[in-house]
Amino acid sequence: MRLPVLFDGGCPLCRRTVRIIRALDWNDRLQFVDATNADARAFFAPSLTEAQMMVEMYVVDQRQRLHGGFEGFLQISRVVPVMWPFGLIARLPGIRQIGHAIYKIVAANRVRRGRCTDDLCEPGLVGSKGSGGSGGSRGPVQ
Image (cartoon, rainbow, N blue to C red):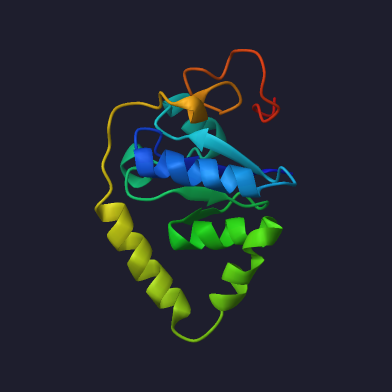
């Protein structure tokens, strides 16, 4: 099962981060969802509000629990092998608290510039305007 990762598609920093993580996700364990799309957000995380999504990204685990911000990042690190060291380091005393603090600072200072329009939002990204075209092997699970 692929873990849905809901992110702010109107945020260039978020899109760039998704692009990097997607490149590291060799086993195709993640499904990126533009959470600015209300229908996609309702499908993958019905309890997630637009206001919550604007604060941090969310990952939906196998038990359908939401993990936001740094906790979401840790969920990603559990399924993307090249990121496993981050999950291990986060278990050290104090590191998780530092991770939460850094995530909150970065998230609070990011810039939004409209909707998803770059190559990340081309076919294969759930909830993007370009998700209905041809190509891309990472389309929505239907």
